[in-house]
Amino acid sequence: MNQAATSDPARLLAAIRALVRRFAVSERADVACCGVTVAQAAALEALGAEGPMRLGDLGRSLGITPSTLSRNLARLEASGLVAREADPGDARSARVGLSTRGRRAARAVAAQEEAFARQVLERIPASRRAVIVESLGDLLAAVRAATEECCPGAFDHLMERGAGR
Image (cartoon, rainbow, N blue to C red; front, side, top):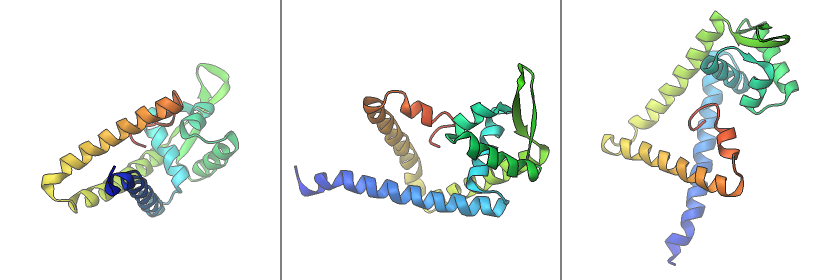
């Protein structure tokens, strides 16, 4: 095997780490502009996509503990972004959903994230954009397959909230 081929896994890992870090920094900046934390933005995103949810389901979707969820929801409630309601299917349970203000905040965060992605794509030659986006899909499929080999079901569990997130 030649030297370049042996360094490909290291280059891939370095590139992915750099992308994850850069997008995480962007995400923190974007949500700061919208007045919520990254964790709060994730809750708004999940509730915007799924509608009102039981607290346990929301916590599992976000991959956070009940105590962390409670703290985040308390802040979102205090800000008027979410509201709790009785669960019509189980009087002992509560659900949480977005308020009108919460839906606006969720849309603002999503718009900021999409604007950043657009800025990134605009810096890539137009003739290569579709290939790059398609290649990222191929990369994600390869990650899924490798994850399934070692940890069956883990990929789908982590990706329940949406493609690639």
